[in-house]
Image (cartoon, rainbow, N blue to C red; front, side, top):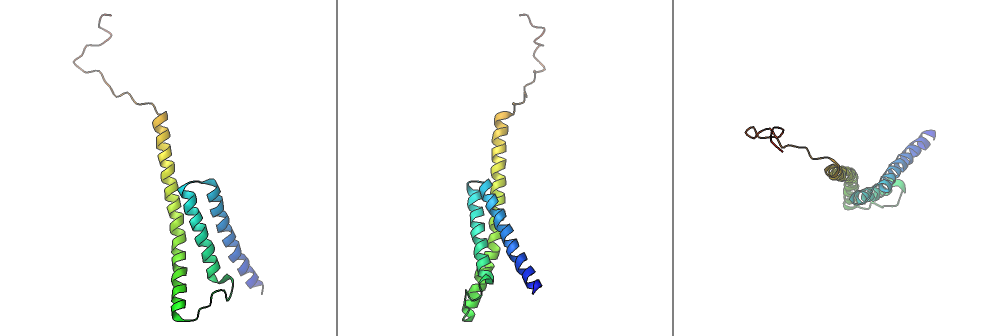
Length: 127
């Protein structure tokens, strides 16, 4: 019996940690990243609910139902990491674009002009 309690505690604890991490990410971001994290949160919760948390919640009556249930679980298992990776990529490109914009505004343009060799030294010219 203690093994079952430990298993349930680890199962629910990991779900709570993942959901909390996604929620914190949603609070700290905005725009497309927030939407992608929200979609990942919904997928995570659906996956958790369909994984057999509530016994008897989904009744598998035929092979077709079992196949459809397996396909839905597979799609949810694939969708969550893809959404999280997409959120990371969108966030990184957004940050890179903002950094480039700030750098363009702050950086001084480098002086690339040089005195032509054939022109006289301006210090030697009369005022």
